[in-house]
Image (tube, rainbow, N blue to C red; front, side, top):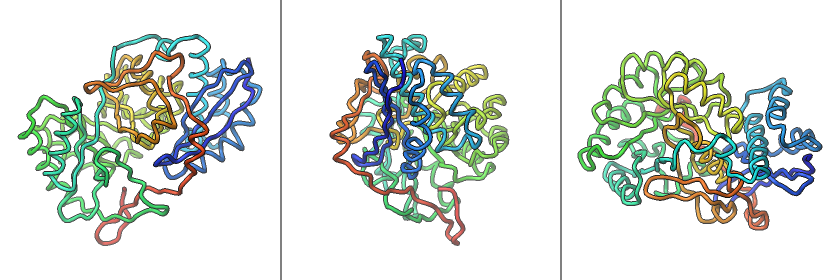
Length: 402
């Protein structure tokens, strides 16, 4: 068996996705996701001009060797474009191998560790009242875990608050929208949100919150301490993680569980955080961290230190990543939770899949492979549309972390 052909499919059924389809000489094909929000064309070009020519003629069963070829073979490595491309190749090859074996991907990985995967949804609103109402709607839909974000008084735009309450899309313009941020207003407001949520719904449901890299380590430590009484499932991305040591200071001041990693590309980005038990959940995902092959290494390292997985699952990751992630989640021993932002009906039609949601849990399908495909004719009806994530400035004009 050899790889006979491969193609990149860029489509925008509401948002942009980059999909890699690999076809073998025996007619078996695999699908991988390479979407990188705001950098889709860069990944597509890298795949088309550098990856696909080197793939043709290779044995698709040699997943590890191909992974090493594209990782070690690239002198400039570990960046998001390179790793997203490697992820797409790796996911497609695992899809092919599982189809060849005639089994769902989780069986090929070692079999089920659980019957279902607990997921969390995104509740948000312009103010506390709207967010409380939104959380209630997610509870009514059966969610056991909900991320709560709210507009902040005095700020026109707050992270996590979208125009559509169910299908949140932050990439809102061809060039980045500039938003204004004020840390003090946010820190004074956030505890009030969770005080109201617990007062309204009690403690039977898990609540999560995303700081989105906005705080200094000491500010993050103070926020974590103030939120302890509300028993958050986790506090996510409270400070930029380029300096892994920064989480040591946060850890010294709060017992609120910490999660980080959705923008990490390799095990080296989280090695110290995991080894020193500075986080509780690692959020790396199939599409960003080198596919299933490399994500397994990260999860195994995390398991040694009682750190659990909590993979990113926003709508900038296609159903291909969600399908692969669910098979990974079904297998991985140290699973924690899976983010689940629902895709639009248009996206679901372009990417037919067999996973399903029921009462707060997702279930991986039984189809051989990862259970997700692409309707190429339908995808062609949705051409690429330039879209960028916002940027943030402080009120005095200083650039900040969005």
